[in-house]
Length: 252
Length: 260
Image (tube, rainbow over all chains, first blue to last red; front, side, top):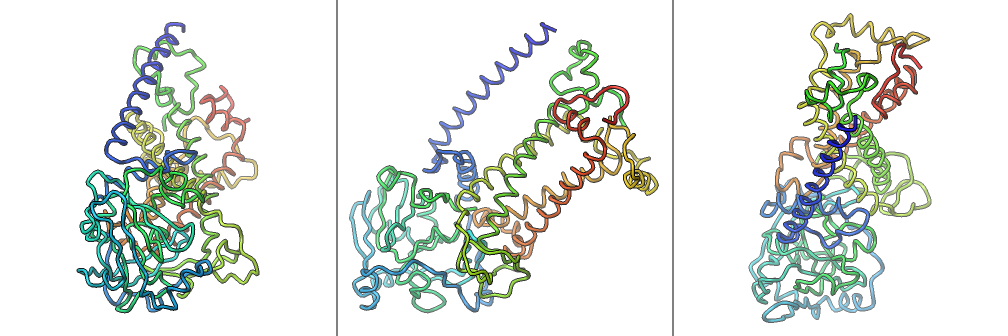
């Protein structure tokens, strides 16, 4: 009996040591290859990290599903947003002629873009689905300029890790990793279903990030910051979503 | 059916050298450590998934078929409860507080735990022979007569007296169905709702007929799992709650008469 328990103790000890070393090695590798999300701490940190790491490995280059024209939703949903700020109402009254998207941070040439300027760049069109974390969805055609094109224009530093992006409306900002920022379907969107992007769907410009849930596609976009340091923004969790209990990574 | 101790030797003492050292009481082990550990962790994960899943439904208690669906489209069916979003017309004059954030986080973390425990159970079950010996029904038992016998037994007013040292044929078929059909289905339909996973493997959602179909199927498979859970608990109760709980917690059963 004592022989058995001694051996059991040794085996348990060895297993625990091996497990701990494997975990610390995995943590090291995950950090090195950018597989740890900014909101990896806390009670649900393990789940968030497992999800982000596996999706990042699985979906680095994969494309969101695109649909045929006849699958476009007849009545695209315009879900409610908080009442507009005075600043937004001024822009809306002026038909957004003075609206600017400011891009700065870890870039060679900080720039600001008017909506017309964005429209003059090579455009990308996609018929993709907006998927809300609540459960509903709709399909629309989206027109815009690939974010990668903008990031090339401003000369984003190669050591940058995230693109933070902000709505003109308060407390509405997100960030994405560079794999998503450089992805061909990530667009600064100014058109929808062959028309201008309606205010009800985020106009004059919004982000479209079709491989993640709708709340990552921030509406009324007016600023984008390229960075390698999430700590500089809010509580350092990557976006305002984790501060209100939602996941930073919303590919699921 | 296997009734000898060979099928029930706990995993950690299954090497030939240690078998000789097993005390007599240990030979009565009903469920291996692997089965007990994964059973309870999966139970815990399942309750967390159920609670958080219900909470997520509250944000949009409408179900659709096909690729898209929202408040502007006709639902397949609605659940007549108030919603946590004012986007949804429920007929109730109030909106419940938004609980989706932690619900989603808990849902996915529990799903990870359940999937990892499921994998551990599968691998352990294959290596130890548990799946083959304890769950695969014997050819002789796979007849209507033996199924009818088991069902007749359960329908008797005073149950019990059944051999608790191994699973009967109805249990085997049910457990295999839950393990190899319902759980894979609930994982598949869940993954099909992930836009990122669908980008990697579009067939995940396309084979189900679209993401709203996947969401609706996820709901129904979850209902099936809940029904299994309820029947499972009732059966455990009827056949001797104490004895079977002891077996699933400590791994041991009382010797001799099984019932209570």
